[in-house]
Image 1 (cartoon, helix red, strand yellow):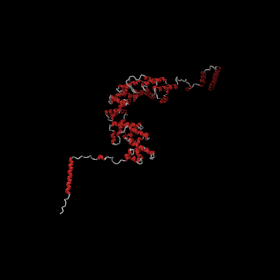
Image 2: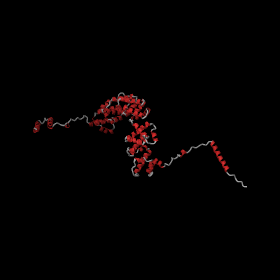
Image 3: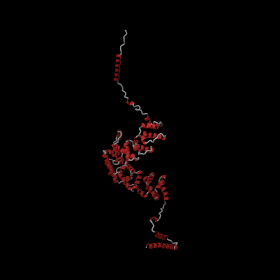
Image 4: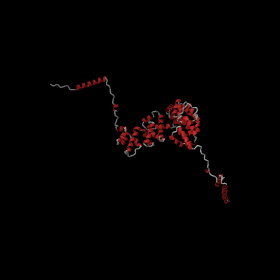
Length: 485
């Protein structure tokens, strides 16, 4: 049976081919391609999806023509020519857009910012603002806040956040009205939008609850509230129940009264950005320091709260420059003098260590004394001496950070400066102080000289009588002259 089916299938193919040839030979001019597709489909079987050809839909305006139109349009609105080529190369989708709609979007943007700088800044950072479907919603501006003059940066931030989270102008209007209802000044509202634009994503109810907690929980007045939100608007990102209440409970458990917390928050509102448990850990590290009592007293001279917060800022500085927090706390414990230095001074030392001295920031874990010595008097002169000797081939071994920082002034002078007289000018005043140091400083004896006593008349009479008594005793002690007979 199988052989019969095979023969019938093979015999049907030549028969179909003969019929096709007869049709072509009899009607050559009226040959239909659909007939060819019909026979080929039966002969070859069904096509797979990848073999199906779809008609091409060419746009009415080719991309090359849109390229010229869009580039001329951006040039007309002041987009920098030096950045135009890269901008269009990164945003090829603009070439498929209608130039007339792009021009409408540019007009709306210009009406919001009123400057070419604002226009180019927004387009460069967020090209999606050229979508007319989005920008036509902002054609009438934000209703209800006509009294506030938002800065270009605030408008730019709002547009970017609205594009990211698909917000409407009404959402922005509700947020700004809530901030104004809290009796915040217009300048404070603008600062909040500039520094923390995602506040427009927060619902008005949550914003009101956070502001109410700051006023009732910390006892903040309206004028002080404007200062706090203007300095640190990020506090509006924290929840009340899961963050702020736990933070105040921690301050209370550490023994700080509400007045102390309020005073420190007004001094630096970023205290409200502390993680729960962070201040406790910093205070434990400071209280376990093994250093001179004078250094420890100077660290705690403004109170334990401020000392712990200053230590936290130094740990954040070290972490920002590449140290993990565990190593940053270790450096703080080994070298507590960094709490007494300004953060700008610490950053300058780290930049000099990494960029000029070519050491890794991890070397601070082994040599934390680097952050505790004077930058101008010790770090820079010693590094210059070592670099000079290295350029002259005067060093046999490599001088590491430990050998550069840990020796005393006298030891460093005897090792690297005294054998090379030309290094004394490089080492400067520090080298001269080390070489000429002898005993007490010059002129110290004047401090210990007793003050002069002005004699009175009575003292003069007493001295005269005393001297007369001495002369009388001297006369009595002399033998009388001998009389010669």
